[in-house]
Length: 383
Image (cartoon, rainbow, N blue to C red; front, side, top):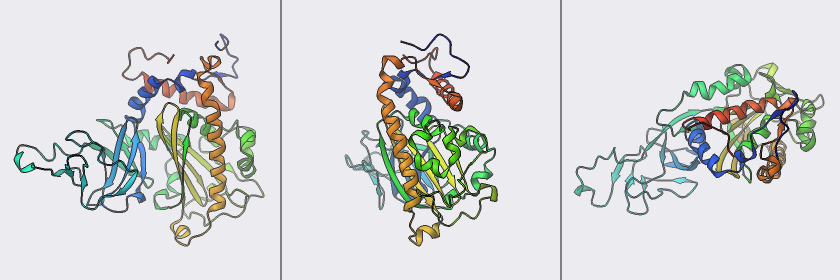
């Protein structure tokens, strides 16, 4: 089964179903997307001191993110240089003096250098830097530690900041929210039984909003019309007339972020930073989603709600603002999980269609095809 030989101008074809179900496609995405681009790994405040660490999955690799003794963020492959054992299997923790492999006790400083091993004095020719942990490129931005596994990382300014410019018209509009200076008010982790691209596509459009997001369309009435804010460069969706804050019941929000402009007040902005970050900005908080694709049909999403530090320190009630987007997340992820099984249906072998308010998703599909064609002969469609 397939789509008609020609589509009317109002419709655009999607990616074929195999792009969402084929483990081979996912392996190529790991190589040419997640392991080649800048990947948002850890909230910087999760690494408050030297030796504090988190392990994150980036494509096919486990990455150990920590702080060195000078306070700088560092990242390494979570692989002992001796026999390849995982240094750390926990998601987070703190190493007091060094990272020691639990297999043969090879021990590494927080800068990755090999500092000790049984009988190390009998191996005077072993270079402790050369046989230290393998470094991963690191950049701190928006209060997060970003990593890149590429031997020659792409330009952060072009690839990451470029996404912000494309969406908002400039980076200053995001800088106004001082995301790095905000404090974590709540974090919720979602384990979604769906391909990562379905989640990206869902976030980019609002054709579904009137159907599954009653709370969101009450706060942002224009979303009921089917066009997401991301459809327009620089646009922020305006709160409803009777809405006082970005909360589940439209009630008053919390302390406004002082740096935002007057024209940014009472508006919601959203940015997709490929391949795995969504940034949502409202006057009193910022919500950051980080996706961790683990399999062709499984994606973990870690969602942070960020507020002014004094709001968090005072223990102010953030539950009404958290509840709004938590419901949105659950509604979206349920829709993605409802869609995933059909990606393997013969009726979706050639994909589906995008209506006019979704046409910009076609650009995302073109981008995916372009990434997967890198380093492959022919670069043909999956399936």
